[in-house]
Length: 160
Length: 386
Image 1 (cartoon, each protein chain N blue to C red):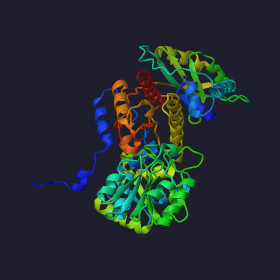
Image 2: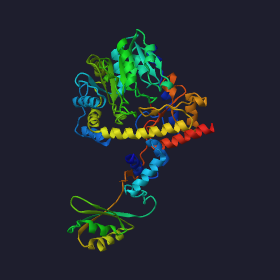
Image 3: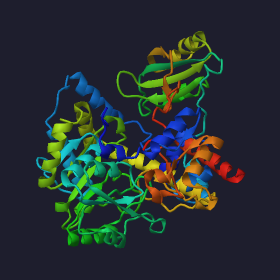
Image 4: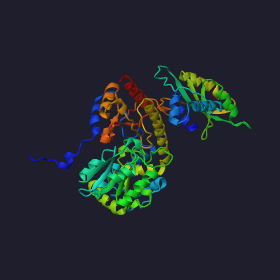
């Protein structure tokens, strides 16, 4: 049941729980309890909304920053990662395999704001060797949603 | 000028669905629950294999019976899922959708005057195929109180000494009914006793929602030698537009079907065949995921119909519901037409699948939950405002 609940919540966190109960052939109370449990267990970590800021008329800049880090004895990358994620500008921090160590995503209002954060804050953190900033130019698909979703049902309307 | 037409063709009635389609397509922003094909896209890796085969220039005919690797994969698939074992070399060939296989099978087996049993309501092509083969169609009217299963008694009553072939379309379009092992055992017993062959159209086999997986009648003792199993990729792998199916059965029948196929079709589309190899090799998970979604929509719809006062038996297969609208006092066609005009929701009258579909509607749930919800809300409003 968990997997199915998560499957639907991930697609739509506002899914009608009454309908979901019918679909999964369980009671609504079961669903509510299961969700509460998963919130407690930190399986469900939040219910953010996917926003197309551009359509809302706001300028927004998102950057994916590759960070190379000298790992510290006993701590590995954890300390540096923590120092980075404490900044509210930072949207996400991932430890990555491959040519660099941490992938940091940052939301800002202007290019200047993001670059100043990288130069003044991020690259001065002890242990950070270098950074490479990649600005996102266009979001085609995010969280499983195609942003410009103009795909129509092209099936013939009535068919045997 | 002489009449240019064959009297047999002239006698064939145009599909009842077609008539309704013409009305719906005139209407703007209608929500349709009338589609008989999956709403999912073909899994991407399957499409990629199709593209890949084109890029490699595989644009020639395949052998008449289809690509060897595909026939082998079909045999593996049927063995893996339905406990059917066929020789890929002699007992299987690839067709242009299940539809072609139905036609080939009936033409290969029926002489003028042979009786073919067609349980109704059912898919629209069996009857015209029988007519075109100069066979005599004999309908068996299935009943709502039996959840539209074919019972041994109904079968026995329809058999005469001219009966040659039984069409067995389960899981069923339009009712969503299935036959379970015990139902099939009773039917098999009669077929063996009376020496009747079976065309088992199992195109929806991958989509059943009961405790037991779909059972093929050909897997029962004594039935393989008298059954043609027809299946394909359209419903299970969301591949309707690729036009690809297959038929399996005893060499003596398949050989003759292949003859018709060879002269009328040559071979199934090459691109589709390459894509289908991938579909059978690596898409069991994708098929499962689609089945899960269908099942959840099915439960939702069943709940909604029953609670809005349109009783519906629990359909355990395909992606259709067959709710009963007799309590409204309307005929199926009246209900469907009024619903379309008043609420812009298109459903198919049960009568499009045979006269005994009167009093029922076929509702397809090959639609997103949002779409289904909206449509069901409108049907509920329609019932209240009536």
